[in-house]
Length: 285
Image (cartoon, rainbow, N blue to C red; front, side, top):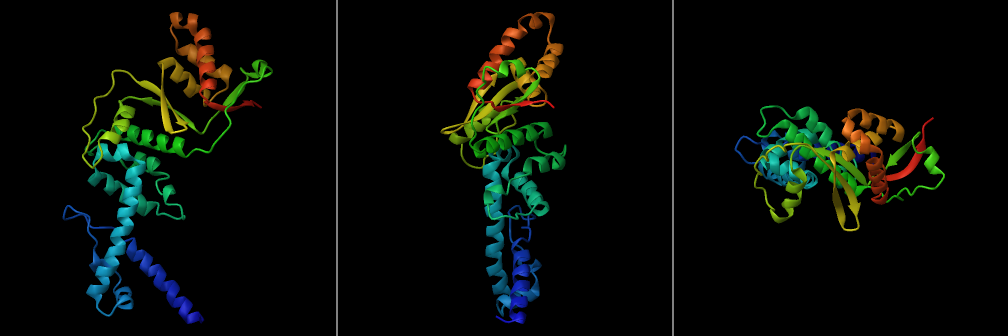
């Protein structure tokens, strides 16, 4: 293959790829390829008849977007159903234009979508933005836990007792602690028995926040309910040493709560070790 041929093929590949990534039209209420927007010179290189070449290229164009929409819909299933697929695909298309796929692993395409939504969702959406972002957090956490690497849970040694308060517990990548203001885990679990694209009605906000832990199990992802103070402690433990986390939690407690806090905190810590929340103990420098 000579240099001119290589240059032509490289240029053709770049132009073909750009055409395949052309955004689909939405004006008719359905997602449609727009062959009229394709590079005319590219169509001439594909076939002598531009209309026939455009129809061929439109097949790849649609497949590209529908495949990526499907990946994002699966990864953020709850978010998609709450928002509705039409609106969800609009946001997904914006995300994919800003963060186009770069690697060979299609399962990595949704990486960063939760952060994108935080800056893209506006108040004129069909769903309360705070609810949508919390749903995205649930979906992203579920995905993170499911895909987390296998790790060895932390099991304290006798010598660790003296080090505990001044040290930081290292969180397991296979466990996520969530503070939720809507019954979103119940909704997400219900998707298995309610397949399809029907938009879910917006749930009522819970009377008080609930804390949950998601953790990988041999069969997938499991969940555990945490009491409010237990959840607050675990959130603090992810940012502070054990001693500082306990001090901060105590400052938020009423006098009656403080009286039983040491015993309850020991129970919460023991339970978190039993359930594999941690993978080690890290001394503060």
